[in-house]
Length: 367
Image (cartoon, rainbow, N blue to C red; front, side, top):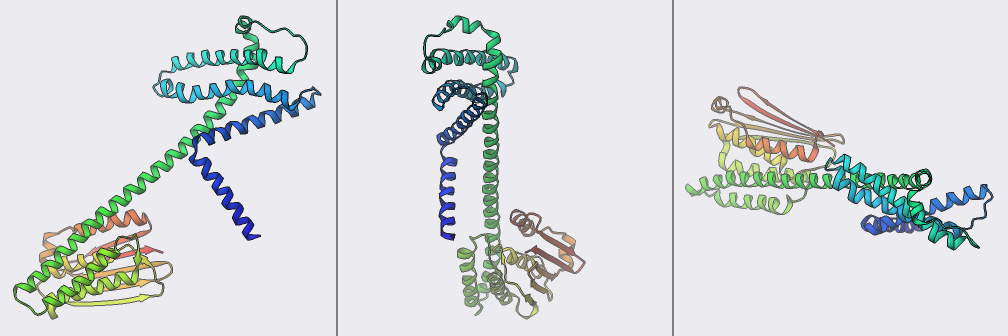
């Protein structure tokens, strides 16, 4: 049973996909459906009136009538609206609409008189001259014009509804592409920023021929491996990001020796995923504007809590009076906020607190 349902769903999905992609098929389906409903309606009405009309007769009459309905619909949608209505030429649009609809009503009557009736009526009968059909205004306005307009309006309504849906899909696609481009741009701003600071650290060690230079290069190699090969995806595991942070901290400790105090506490009850480099960027920002500006004994405290509902990442760093006096604004934090906006929208909170000797950033992400 499950297999049958699965196969049936696959068939339906294939059919829907075919009609979505094939423009001609969509039009054939629309007109075929309306044509079938029109014949069914006429057969029910005529049967109630005890009129001797068969399916063959109905097919002939409806075909003659539908040709003008189709012509009217395409004229309005693909000529009248784009050429006149959208250009706000309303008077000309109204005059042209009346003229063409009247002309199509005449053609519809001619098809009935000279095509449908000879094929369905036995014996001799009177055929109206074409000139008489043109001037038989009362009959045209009473029967033929009201028969053409409703079908055209149905086509117009369906057409514009589908166009509106298509425009929405297009706008969503463009917005998504724009967000992805902006996200890649922001990541591109973060990576060189981090590399610039790290290479400066290694350069400082190499100047004094420090034996720690090789260890620094090894740590940097591990970090680059994660950045170059694991940060292209939209999300990575929290543990991977924390490993990257640990490597970064170890690299920074080589520069600051014992005067830097870093503490990391974790309470992870639910393994989750985070955007790559987000948490690392917060740590890097704390080093750059905290420890990097403090020639005393800088401190950095990091805490990570992950539950089923939220991920909370908090980092506190000491700041020097010099940093406070300059009142610097971190480009890194601005980039992080933009990236979070693109990914989470309103599903996160970035709280930044600063005192005379402390700078704190708390990132809360709703799971």
